[in-house]
Length: 478
Image 1 (cartoon, rainbow, N blue to C red):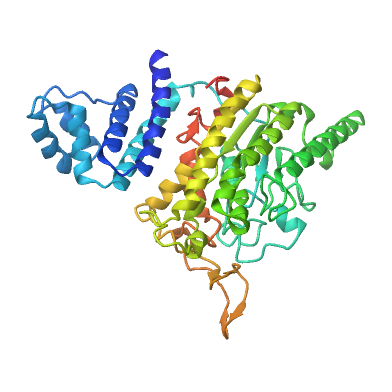
Image 2 (cartoon, rainbow, N blue to C red):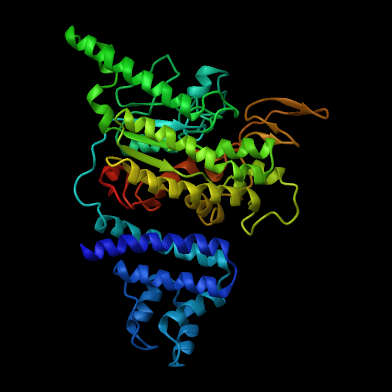
């Protein structure tokens, strides 16, 4: 048990490496991160002790990581100087053959290879939580038909890959919330605002495209309103269920409504904040957006606390992604020297990281303030940045390219026809959406969403490091 707790702590330490190597460019910073990485690997049970330069453990370890050929000669030479430690020599070798970006990739993939074992040690034993339902709050990254039902229908070719027709999603297929439903063995969540063909037996989706945490953005359905909709939904569902039950009804309405006793046992998921930043960038300066972060997160905190008062106990919270890596953000950037080594807009991502830093602190405070809450913080930023920085190795084309829609100084929506300077742009989708990280320049493709779901739902990017079906086991004071 002691070792599993140590390993869980090392995972949190590893995240420091992941972020520091992205941000730093100097040798000492990388060496410090490498040192923490050694402690992490050792705690998780990998052989990282080398008694001599010719050690079988050294060679086998490097071979298992496919690093033997480039690293072994440098390490062996370094270790011949007895004043240098194995740790120092390993870090030195990595630094010599890799730039910081490549080093970060190696660290992350080694982490992903070990974390499955770690999750089992650190609290993944036993059965899952058996969540009876999921209630989701968010924006277009998780909207399964809300904004399409409320306003204009999301048109073809959206939905072409999986559903074969428009499904209310700004995507060629499924979203991460759909893969969450699959993981928990539920039907796909119906949008609360959709009145046709919906079932709320296993949850509801209050997310709508364009939504933000604070009022006054692209959409009227801000987070506070979504929570108000949930409270009304809970009240009316409870009334209807009790009324039908008192009449001994077992008809279709009874089978499609939520169960009152299941609201406290359900999982409450959040994927929202991107539009607070993007709307702010369009209507104010980056410094003003950064200054607004405390107010944004205060509003988020109020929403979580309100749900807690309604009986919600299990929360799965995504931080915001690297907004500066969205193709339209890159195409719209007009500041020289504002692109990082991956091709993303540095200043926009700096604001996103600052919001995420403050969000992490907020969730720590909420864990203390809400004694029965079990809150899982998911580092969506790091997962998405990893995918984008390693897109080609993962089988995708250049992540700046998108499959549907076009940009000609302004955005033309996917599937719409527009005439620009006498030229007709029909904006038909690309031949193979699965090769693109971005579907339409703003939203991720189904293939990218699947990749991300596979990397976050197992707990690899979660704090605490638990898979989503075990989120109820999150310790109160993490």
